[in-house]
Amino acid sequence: MLASKVEAACRKFQEIFASCEGSYIDAVTFGAIGERDYLDFKLIQTQKWGVVTVLLEDVRYFKISKGDDLVSVFVDEVSVSYLPKTNQSWPDEAEGLVTRFSGLPELYWVRVAGPATISAVAAIMTVSVSRDSPESH
Image (cartoon, rainbow, N blue to C red; front, side, top):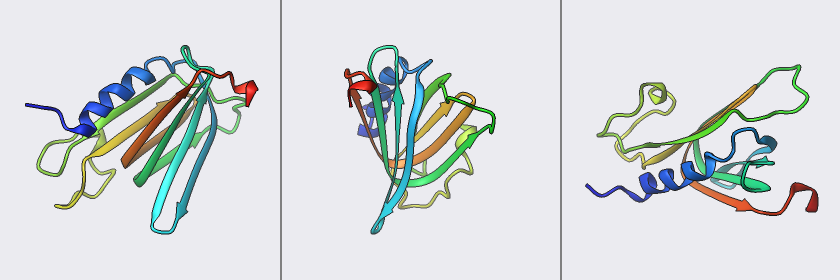
C-alpha cells in the first residue's frame, strides 16, 4: 500500500528532527489571521543546521509547558507522527487530543520533549532548515 503524502512527509520530517537532539527552542509563536491559525517554532544549534523552523497551520491541538526555573530551553527529542483519517487507528497517546469526525483530514502530531514540552496536532506542516548560524540573522 502506498503511503499518503502526509505519511511520507512525516518520514522526511523525522529525518530532519533526528538531528535536533540537544538543540534549543528559540521562539514559539501562535497566532490567528482570519480563519487560519498557525504555530511557528524555531530550533537553533541543531547537530546539522543552524536553524530548523517548524510551521503548523490549521492547528487542531496545541499545548506547551515549561518549568519556571529554566534559563534556556533545550530539546531532548523532536518527533512527528502521522494521524490518519477517522477510519484508521491512532496511537493511544494521541486519542482524545482531537475530536474525530468524518471530514477530519490526515494530521501531523508533533512533540518536542525536554524540560519544556510542545505538543501540537495540525493539518498542514512545513519544515525548513538553514545552515546559517543563528548569530548571523
